Image (tube, rainbow, N blue to C red; front, side):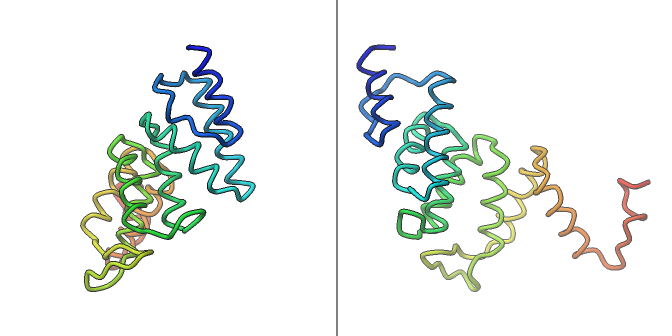
Length: 168
């Protein structure tokens, strides 16, 4: 990695932009940037977190994409925007990142009625919600597995856990 790129990484950890550095970050550098973003998020410095995670999202880091989705979904350091949150969650979900698949499912399940979109909610879409929830569960994500199990229970009349095929 060039000296200039190393300098830009150092500056990015102090809040300056790294977008001029087109060289992909190695694993250690990615971890450092991700950890700096997480620390900024934990400290309530959402703009710095967004800046850092954006660097990683540009390099197709699905965890960073998901975290940016959280910022937009919750209006942290940015205007609340369900469509932008969905776009970031979808990018990460398509890369197979099960936590983002779960977030996307929950956005569709908790959507507004009758297809209305607001700044903070998508339109309700059970089909898309179930699609992404199943994908997340298939990826082994425990919260999705549990949510899918609870959904199955709520939709199955006279459900009893001892009668479930997985328990026989």
